[in-house]
Length: 337
Length: 74
Picture (cartoon, rainbow over the protein chains, first blue to last red):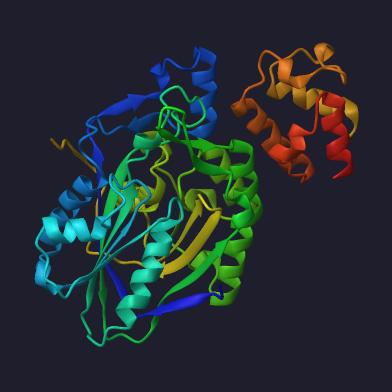
């Protein structure tokens, strides 16, 4: 896709929710002590959040997040024009998670709803979709809610030594508003390398289960070969420079991949944020989770940030966005019953 | 990359004494061979040589000499 722009879009608020239940890689019994030590050192991942109740799904976390965000932004449900959910872990295939949230929380009929099936690049894809939809609504303060996140542990084989130590559960809910400002507020570069579709995929088991399997070497290859190029192209086309960015936030794949990308893209390490140690790889919530965790520490000069999601597909989505939200909070622990 | 340097990298990434690293060694039989260590090795080769090995590249290799040949000719 050609590089695209958004105009007059304002990200008003970001909140994230994580299960209270924590798994510590330092005591993960499927690895030996030396494997645990090497894993934490090289992936950067110590703690992961795990949804403890199989009856609770991603929709339930989104429901709680949407209610909290509406309250914090002082938005009425009646004012919401668009509700988009980015997830790959719905508990049921039909209807869409967005329609379930609409029904559970009793939104008005004028709110359009649908899901986007996208993983680690999903937050940027969702932001792009919402930005274009808002631009098409002839209303100065049109509002959208973007839900982005996964209960990835529902797809994890507990004995899989490559996948289990990496993935973690989290959801983020983002409030986005149209303004009458006609300046550019975002540049997007969305790409797909479908030949990498086998690098991360679910595979059925004989007993009917379906687990996510990961080819770590191929994920590394695609990430390190294509993401820096995608970012460079975005920067060149936008006419901005790396120095114009207050911070760089990548999908939280693992430390080895993220450090390699940052180095190849020539980014200042001090401006690259992480949430790997605290929350692991939180799939399509990883960028907002990382933003929320670090936002109070970021020195803000331009109010422009660079974000980049990459993974399942193989899908790559980078964006430079104007970002000055009223709310950008660290993840909140939640227990749902 | 000459074979001596390749041996040093294998030794460091797989925690083996360099004298035990032999071109005819079937790398999948190394005690420390794991998906994580293989990934670290791939990353190291990419950083030092600018060569990116894929999982299908490795699938076509049996002994360490095969990997070295691949790196040299890629």
